[in-house]
Amino acid sequence: MPELRNRLKELRARDGINQTQMARLAGISRQTVSLIERNEYTPSIVIALKIAQVFKEPVESIFSLVEEEK
Image (cartoon, rainbow, N blue to C red; front, side, top):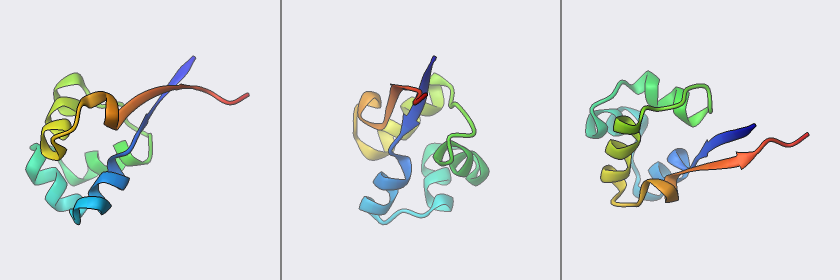
């Protein structure tokens, strides 16, 4: 089964945004940002779209499905 991966931490570092700032910009909690980055939480479509808007990137460039390694 594919696993959802993301580039959230990488993009935050690129733009100099910390987790608290990211949370405020996307209208989510800092804990949610942390969980998404650790792949411990799968964001809703709405949250994924909000994150994409913050970075002005397509959702697909931030989130991707990858096959699990066996």
